[in-house]
Image 1 (cartoon, rainbow, N blue to C red):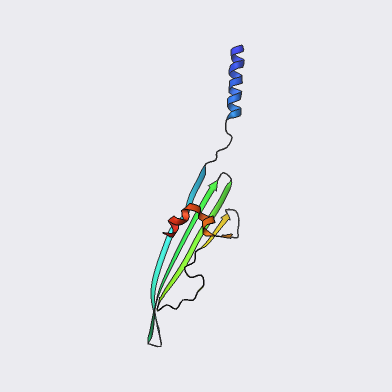
Image 2 (image 1 turned 60 degrees about the horizontal axis):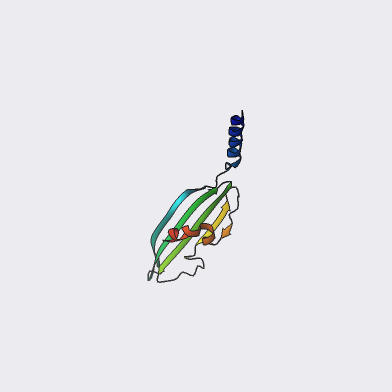
Length: 124
């Protein structure tokens, strides 16, 4: 009988000390790093020729840590013209968001906040 009580006590201690949740992080890449470039030529007054090269880069990353889920997005558009004529203030500037998965409006943040160490992989 004493042996049974000892075994039962040991099992209660094991069960009470067992972890009830895990702290694993699950990462899901929703859309990979997508880069697209287009080149166009524009002729004005049959004399001036302007060459346009437009490149866009988009990246979406979903992370889930226990019950917390976020979607981070990266978007950058670069327009290069020859001769140089672009005056767009966001030309070549990355724009990022980090938003909870269940939110409908995206939250704008700096790209380092949205992607952390992964940012250098995106920008290369």
